[in-house]
Length: 107
Image 1 (spheres, rainbow, N blue to C red):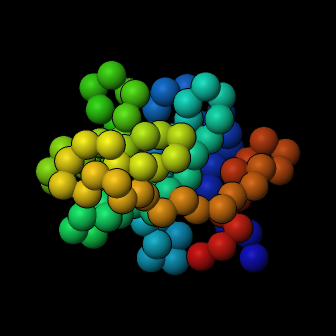
Image 2 (cartoon, helix red, strand yellow):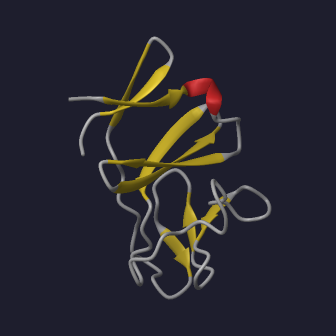
């Protein structure tokens, strides 16, 4: 079963948005017209990443940043490049797009 998250255009370029589906916290980031969807969980302590609702990125909107310890992750592959979990990565979530809408393909 697929779950509709949002329309692709609901997430502005260089921005992020959080979702919860059946108790699973997720977030999406749009960079260079591509969408990246991850489980909202830092690999260090298992805490949610965002500072505030839908605030998953650093000030330059170039990296995903954990609000707990400031760990930094690449947007495109979820790899931690700085912080206490360096070398670990975020969990990517499979998705598909249909008629401009983003659908979660697993829960």
